[in-house]
Image 1 (cartoon, rainbow, N blue to C red):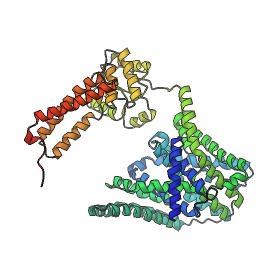
Image 2: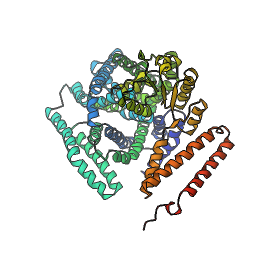
Image 3: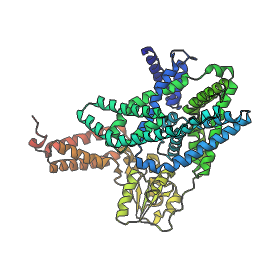
Image 4: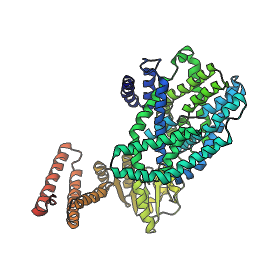
Length: 592
C-alpha cells in the first residue's frame, strides 16, 4: 500500500506541474499520471477499483465544501435554474443523443440508456476546473453548477428506471421515497439543532485535530445515511454543507477539509485515467476516438442551443457548452448497471465506457481550444454592443464598478448626487443591476463611450478600474480629450501611482493605503500605545510617505536613483521618530 501511495504521489508531482506549465490544467495532468501508472501503462497500481472508490471521497468533500458556500436562502434563489435549466439540459441532451443512437441501429431501450448516461457531465472535473480558473461565480459557472446539481438529483430516478428497462418491473417502492424524504429532513433538523452545539463544544477544547475529525465524521455519516436510503452520496454531502453554511464555523470547516479535498480529487482523476481501457483504444482507435469526439461535439452543440434558447450572451453560452461537454462519472455506473440488467451487452458497455473516458481525457484540450483560439478570435470579430447611455449628463462619471467604484457610488447615492457608472464586464453589470444599481455596460477606454456618458459636462471622473493597463489607457484618454475634468484615480500600487502621476493626475489614491494606516493604528493601540500617540505616529508617517512619493516619482525610472531615494526616505522616517518621540514613550512597557 505504501508503495502504491508513493507511485500516486510521484505521478502527481511529476505530471501535474508539467500539464499546468503547458496550459492544459491540473486535471489532464492527473489523468495522464493515472494512465501511466495503470494496468495499460507501468502497471504500478494493481487494484484500480479500490483507488477509484477511495478517490470518490474527494468528490464528496468537494460537494460538501461547495454546500458550505451556499446558504439555504441562496439555494432557494437558485431553484429555477436548477430545475428549469438543469431539467432542460438533461431532457434535451438525452433526447438528441438517444435519437443519434437509434440512427446507429440501437434499439429503443439501449438508446434511452445511452441518451441519459451521456447527458451527464462530470461534477468533479467541472467544479474543480471552474474553481481553478476562478469562474464559479461567472454567469456560465453559476449555470453549470445549477445543471450539475440537477444531474446529481436526476441520477435517483434514472437508476430506478434501469430495472424497468431490463425487466419491466418497477423497483422503486413508495416506502423508499418516504425514507429518502425522512433522511433529508433528518439531516436538516440535525444540522440546525445538533451539529452547531457539538462544534461549539469541540471548539472550546482547543483541539484542531478533533475539529477536523468531527468535520470528516459529519460528511461520512451523512454520505452513509443517504446511500442507505438509495440517494447519491454527493447529494447528501452537498446537503450537509448547505445546512452548515449559516454556521459560524463555516470557514473553519472549509479550511480544515481543503487539503483532504484536493488530494483525494487528484486520486479520483488518476483512478479515472487508470481505468481507461487502452487495449480497446489500440484495437479500434478510430471508433473509440470518434465516439469520444462525437460526444464532446454533440453536447457542445446542444448546450449552445440551450444557451441561445434561454437568452444567454454568445460568450456565456459558448463557455457553458464547452464546460459541460464531457461525459460524467455517473455514466460509468449507468452503463455497468444496464449491462447487469441486460439492457446493453458487455461489448457495447465497454465501448461506451471507453468513449466517456476519452471525452474526459480530451476535454481539457477543449478548454485550451476555447481559451487560445475561439475566445481571442471571436472577441476580435465581434464588437461588443454597449448599453445606451442616459441623455442627461451627470456631475460624476465612475469608470469601473468593482470594490472601489461601488463604495464611491453608494456614498454619492446617500448624498443624492447623480452619477453615471461605466463597467466593461457584462457579468458584473448583470450582477449589480439585480441589487437596483444603475450601471451601464460600456468601455471607458473608448472616446465615443466617454463622450456619450457626458464626461465633457461632468465635474469629476472617478477612475476605479481594477486592471492597471486599462486604467492607464483610460487616464491618458481623459487627460488628452477632457483636460478640464478633475480625475480622482485609484492606484493598485506605488508603481501604478507613478504612472498615473506621469499623466498629470495629482495624488492618486492607493487602494490599500488608508486601510493599512488604520490597521497600523489599531496594532499600536493593541500594543498599549495611547490612542492619541498612535494616531499622531500614523499621521506623521503618512505625511512623510506622501512627500517621499512625490520625490520618488521624479526618479522612479532610474533604478539607482530610486533605490537611493528609498534609502533616504527610510533614514528620514527613522530620524523623524527618534527626534519627535520621547524616550519613555518609544516603546510600550514590557509585561511580566
